[in-house]
Image (cartoon, rainbow, N blue to C red; front, top):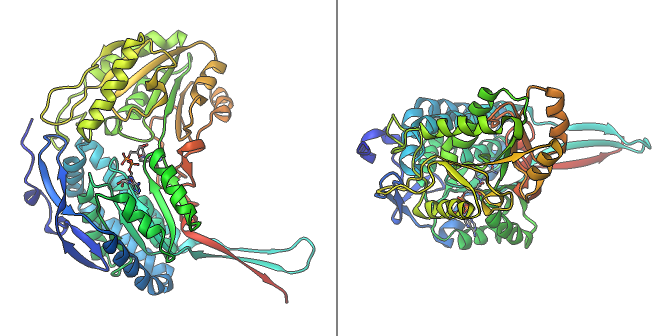
Length: 487
Ligand code: NAD
């Protein structure tokens, strides 16, 4: 394993920002250690915001709101475009920062930066195309005009697994819509969020339009903001369990919520699939971010005729991946985020093995330092095992055999989640027929990667409410206003 670069040595000075960012000023401080999951060492320390800090951020967002709302769409668009350019120029430094604090392999980190930056470009374009309506009532009584107004101050809460992209997927549409925001990134990965705020300021985002807070006490800080009448929107990405709690909290003041929650994606391979294409797709769907993705394939359902070849092929590919520190250029599978994550994965795998699953590669945590779990394939997994019901969030591929299409649909839908699903077959008619029966917000047909800023990202059932990205993502930060006009 190579030694990790000094935090001060790898990046442009513009990216060294570890302080609360409120009203355009940085407030230095400590309290939250940021760990390098590749070694377990402390990388940096960031401030631990109090509820008073959160109220200052709400006040700053409130003070900046009238001018930002009144800023012409073209100007907002130009600022977002500039932010896109700056992220692209600093792509390598941001990718290194992500690899350091999150642990993901550099190719994944580079992919994330490119994806994250694209939200600024996409919403720079959408900012100038906010839709309205003009209709006549069927009775002829009057005319209906519908305008879309910015919803108001938005609280944005993001997870650690995509520290750049989950933030830009919210900030870009919110700013395009004319809202001011308070971002609360995960305390495991705050450095990327602060670095991006720096670039935003450089791009021309006025003080107070974007505020960033890190805290070790997210419940109190968030609840204080949700209780404030100036806050009108909560956009959350994270686990279903925390999402439920936040929905209950937001209900007290009927705050509008967009929720991007957990997943349990089935990856279905039909007998007639192109085996190599299915294996390529499986590696992407499973191993992007070493499995720490909400869209990660969590259950592989493979039809009997192709099952054994698929197990053999996936075992060979997973077993060949190079494991190492995220920032080591040779690494293909980085560490998990924390020691707790390893313990959870280990528990799911060992329980499945006790129930009769067979390990074909990997199967046990690796010794430290760092939080490493090897790419693992399990076959003969009983459908009722816990690993089939819970998000694994790691590099483990449990494979289940099925016989008929009906069986595949029944197994795939047997979960409270409905974020993403994957389907491999050479027969497009069959794919569309099955696709209609799958309870999912997104379906990859002969593709292991579906995320795209131009597409609506989100889930059904307990995977969430609303969509991010695409042409509708901006409307999550707007309220329609209906004018009944008689003339
Ligand atoms: P998490 O729910 O533990 O935390 C997410 C964020 O919420 C963090 O910023 C955390 O500090 C904050 N938080 C935790 N408790 C809170 C509370 N009581 N009040 C307010 N904020 C609170 O999730 P995580 O472990 O950081 O991320 C992994 C989860 O995120 C997985 O379930 C994954 O599927 C999900 N995820 C979903 C999407 C999506 O688009 N649907 C994308 C990425 C990750």
